[in-house]
Image (cartoon, rainbow, N blue to C red; front, top):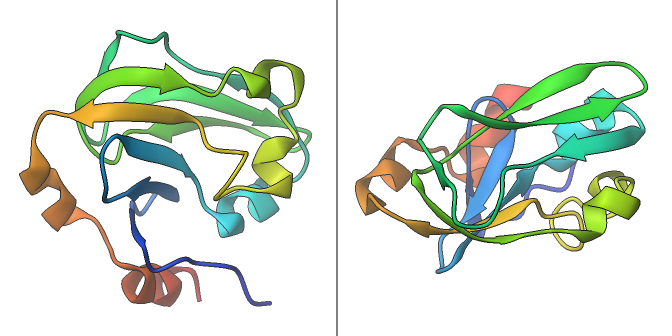
Length: 126
């Protein structure tokens, strides 16, 4: 099976992605949403909170599992996708578009160097 892995973003081993332009937009990969199955609930922090690289910041719950969400980079949350409260299925339907989770103002640009590019991520999930 082939998964969509846009090359305009970076990826964590735990399947979160981050755009490289600011504000940094964060979500989960097409592979991750497929593995989870139908997403029924997403728990996210509040605007103004800070998240830390490689630390849990929220939870995604599906019909199969409850999974922690990990921060690809550190920063202050400048936007939360409130649409997910009423439509958590957006994570399944459009993981790189309407199903995004957070936008942050990054505090350490060097953390991007630790993330995988699309080719490295695709090799990991193959």
